[in-house]
Length: 396
Image (cartoon, rainbow, N blue to C red; front, side, top):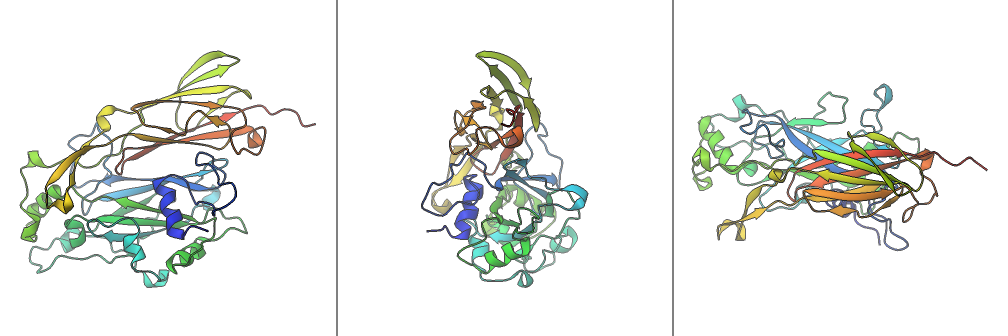
């Protein structure tokens, strides 16, 4: 039986699998990119309220109200990363971003799902938060931003989406912002346009067009201790049950994105290895059919953070947990030694020979692409990709 649309959308982000096929038959293996798929959405604070006290660490993915956040999707296609801008300002990617305020403990899509069925016309545009208007010490109640709401176009033809985090009671008591992205996958004449993808999802239809790009992600808000300090700084009276602002030394660090700092390649041809060294994102390497790329990638162990997790909703205090690296590998063609890794320093092998479920003996048009996504077990994400060009045998 087909998966419901939101099950497919959640799998898209959480597992990096894209829209899943219906049950029955030969399911595509996770590592193989055969359609346009969203592999990850990265969020980072790009307009902080205050200078980062630790600028040498990864960018924050956890934000405070009134801070600017950038959402960056990473979308893979069978020919490489999707061009988010497109030639002549005519992008394949044409997203709608819907923000919804998740309550404490709510899972992804719980917020928007609770408002379905609805239509785009019935969802307001998110207002731009203002410290002067929203942090009014004389106000008798805390503001509540509309939820759900459509993030306004930031006017930048760059494939990103920038927005400012609202100041809302739900977010002050431990909530986060749920982000739903809906887009067409191409501008081909027979492709489903973004508006139809959105209509079908918001109508809560069981089956969605398979070529729609759908993904649900989370922008974590906090830490709550820093929110309390922020409110006190502006003289805002918060509910006493939220507690008092702690000493600055006791405020935990925000959740940050991990960083891939090295992506090195050794090319093995007929049993002999040649070190090509570190490769930039998007590097194109020349190889022969049958060659193997031995890949080593690393991230700083110091990027792994400890964090507190409430026990029984906080009734029994908190316990300390630690982030762990989880790497996922994807390819458009070829054979991978493994499609996952879990270490600060990871190693993999990618061989230029037909892989499982590949349909052609050679990569289409002589080029294959490898995608790597690194997650830290919470909300942090980073990625890399390289391509290989191989000479094709002459046509018969």
